[in-house]
Structures are given as C-alpha cells and as structure tokens.
Length: 482
Image (cartoon, rainbow, N blue to C red):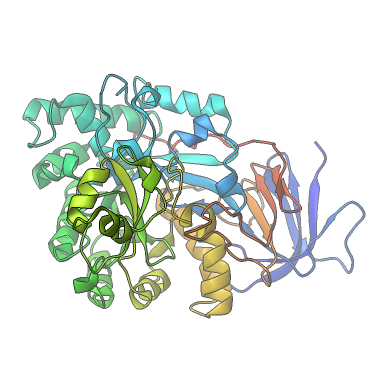
C-alpha cells in the first residue's frame, strides 16, 4: 500500500499543547512519520496548508451498539471526524440474547428491536462487530440493565444473591473477551430498584482488571449529590475508575448547581480516579419519561408507538390539541422518545470546559428524529464553543475528544498524533468547521471536515465518505491482569 503524506498541516497532537506545522506520513495502518514541514508539499501529497490535523475523535458516550452492525457506514460519525465510538452506555448493551423478551424493556428499546439482541454473550457480539467491519472502531461496555434483563424475571426488585452471581459471571466473561467495563443507568425504571449493594456485587468483577465503571447517575436532578456519592462508593468498592455519563444539572430547580457538582468531582478525583463526559447542548434526549414531564421543561416528541403522527411536535402543542394536561398526553403517547430542553447554557459551559470532562455525543441512531447531537457534537465543540465563543482553546477542545478519552479508556495505541500509533486521524478546516444539524433538521452533516482515516484507511475524503471501512472492535489489552 502506498504511503499517504499530509503536508504543511497544523498538527494538534491530542496532548492539549500548541499546534505545530508538520508533514505527517501514514503507512501500513500507522502514523509512520511526523517531521517538520518541507518548504512546499512533495509530489502526490495532500496539501494540508491552512488545515488542522488531529487524532481521530473518540466519542466517549454513544448508543451505537447495534448500528455498527446494521448500518456499518456510520455516516453520522465519520462526517464529524469520529473514528472510535464507545458503546454499551447507560446500562444498555447488546451482548445478550434478549430476543425472547416481548416487549423489550425500556431503555433497551433505544438500541433497536428485540430480534436484534440475538448474541449469546459478549464474545459473540464482538465477533459480529468484527464481521460487519464498521467504518469506526468500537469500544464496548457491558450494561447492567441488559444483565438484569438476561437473569431476572422482573425489574421491580433487587437482584437475589444467585442473580447477582450470574450477572457478575457474565461481566467477568465479557471482560475476559475484551470489554472495557461496566455501565449502569440507575435513573431508569428497570434499573432503579437495584440497590447499591447489587451494583457493588456485580462490579467486584472489575477489581484488578483496569476496567471502568461508567454510570448514568441514579438522579441528575434534586438527588444528584447522593447519586454522585453512590457512584464514587461503587468505584472505590470495585477499585475502578468512575466515569459519570453526560454530566448535567437537569431541570429548572437545579440550574446553577454545576459549580457545586464539579467541586464534588474534583474532591473525589483527589482520592480516586474520576471523570465525566458531556454533550454540547442544553437539551437531553431519551425515552419519554413521565417523571420528567413538567411545565418548565419544553419537550419535543421524536417518536411514538401509540401516536406515530405526533413525531416532531412539542408535547405542549399535542396536549393543547387533545385538551388534556401534559402528563395525560405523555401517557397516551407511550412508548415514545423525547428531547427535553432542561439545561442552561451557563451550566453546560462550566461542565464542558472543566478539565475532567470528555466529549460524548449520547446520540440515538435508531431515533427517526434524533437529537442533533448525533450528527453535530464534535464540530459544535470545535466551531461554536472553541472558535466562535472562545470557551477554551482549540487545542483544549481537541484534547477532550482525543488524548483524554484515550487515556481514560486505556487506548494506548491511538488518541495522539505520534509515530507508531494507529493512524486514526481527522483533517479539518478550523475556520469553517461547524455543526449544521438542528432540532428541525437533525440529520444534516457538519461542514469543515475534509478527511478522515481509520486504521490508515481513507474513510472520508474531500468532505465525503469514501465507502471504505476499516474499523474493528478494540479489545482491552491484557483484559484479566492489567
């Protein structure tokens, strides 16, 4: 295979340091050479003058578990410069055979239909990802709610000792097959009855492995402080790094609490490894949860099993048309998906800018009208937040989506522009990069991403997907002993 040279480009190497001008050579799937830029581009090189080259972006929080198999082109991610996705978040993952469940329990419905949960275990899921050859790499977590669905006959109670043992055994097997950790979604009804002791018993499998505990907290609203304390306690019990998923201050009564919450993370991180991810929007998205239906939170319905024609409309408008209150309308729409406008810019700014924060899209690829974060998160951080508003330098923005998540997840062979590392790279125009997806037009591709390489293969060129796919499931190195 001929080498590819990107010449005269401004390199942001993922460390957070200042850019430097260089010629970067890609060969045999790795970054073969990083050298001072020649006076002019050599023959056959890609002219990178005026452009920026960064490590491929690592989406630290996704729900792409099944789409990497069903739609492996991964267009929503490749067009943003994403080269690796972390799946299995919020307690929901695909490495269990749940095809007999009817209906599939919430929030597992966010990933797809019950017939798609057909993998006997994590190893079988991993093989399916490799066989699909997705356009991005995949880092996989094992979801606590998926384990509960596999081993329990109901979700309205704590797991028995035997059930906890069975779930821990599944987690151990998954870790041995290369999974990167355990995730929970304790805010969801089908996991909320799980006690701290249940999660601790399962998470004991993480001890001594270097794997992580990632959690959608039991509460992101009034009870967020005890929810954080619980997460930190589980991490200490399991001797595992804690990643708080999509950290936010949700709902009007919590507005302005981001300083308090971040101080808790800082205090915890002084004694145990702690971090978080955040998406760059003031609206969240999930299934339609009656507990979150309050007048002060505008809600857009994205899909509805019972009333599919209402997709795309505001819940308040639907309720007014039906002459019922918001809760009654939401009940009639179930099962449904929703976007919740439940945060403030000041809190999102403070969380996104914090040194402990990575970028994660939390996009829902199976949603027919997804939150725009699915298609726009990473260009939005680079364009809107770094360039246009100056919330942080461009180098810091890139660090949050490259070197920092690589370090957190233990991706030792990528995340930086360094010789010998995997050639996961993104070439973009820092003056032009911008998100274009909106709540009304949520699947519009971003501007300004020029080229993307995944394991050295050109996956996007001149701003367009090439159709080439070279991703794979990344297995945690030395999964038992590290």
